[in-house]
Image (cartoon, rainbow, N blue to C red; front, side, top):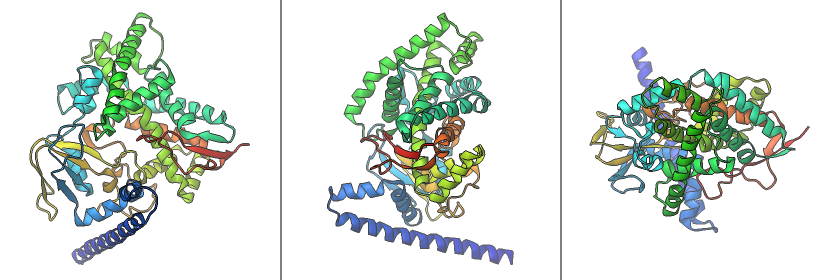
Length: 453
């Protein structure tokens, strides 16, 4: 009886999956028809506007997971890193297999990371190796797991609260809070304040864009990034030298790195410290601000979830608020996919109906957004559910190259939003329609209003 029941449930789940895929296909047809008869912009621009949103991408992935779960093209969609073609992987297990298999699928950021550091790689761009083990091990000694609760979270909440308190009913989440908190983290936790807040924000945001988001190898962006690189290196070198010459009793990452250097820890030369901090700073500033804006954008579209978040903020239920933020990022992620390059021909989903061979040199888009909504692996994926286990989330990557600051990210984002969520009648500002990116991959403005007491 159990076997029959299990077979019936398996069949029912697949029928349901097909049903929702057909609904999504119909929705795609509707989106196409709307774009076809639209009046503003070109047909391509109207379609792009709809399909590049998180709901639009989820609709596309709903269809692909059933009818074309692994799409392999000879066309090169990424111009910034060498490759021979493109593959899009949408099923959850296949996404996990790609991101877990560092032997067959490599990270590709190394060449641009070496440009930024003037010769050396950063561990996010390394394959499994002694250099990777050395650098990550050393930085785990400098960035302790206890820091999140003892140093990072209290400071982030204090800075965010001060920033919101300074606003009188009108606030720009990005400029007034998100970037203020993330740049303060670089200052007080890493020990690298930058020559000015605008400089450190511009440098890290531009270089993040150049490293991870510049898929088309934009020439103008490349020139801007290359102009920043030597200034960034010079500033960090000077900062490290100054701290060594004029020691201060501060418990920050830079001082810990210098203590490890004195102890003879491998990888902790001045240059090694500088390169590791470059990578960590680039990953921190734009990511924290962007993710915070995306979380609140999602909550503002979900009144019940927003109310739950406001109650969690008011009662200081930090665990619940963190889960709410993770779930909001599942629906509205800052990175809907992660890309890797096949080192050799790889058979994906061997022995299944969706088995495909990924040719050598192919750039593989592992669609983490799709993986988070795979009905064959995630229960009720369309439901906003704060009771999900942590292992279903891929907001900060997956496998060996999970973001080094993932624990910091998931803790700081609620801190950025908490003082805002405590305000009465939180809403978009007058004339605001959400996040303004100013033509970049990052939020530039998110105007909000609340009833000041």
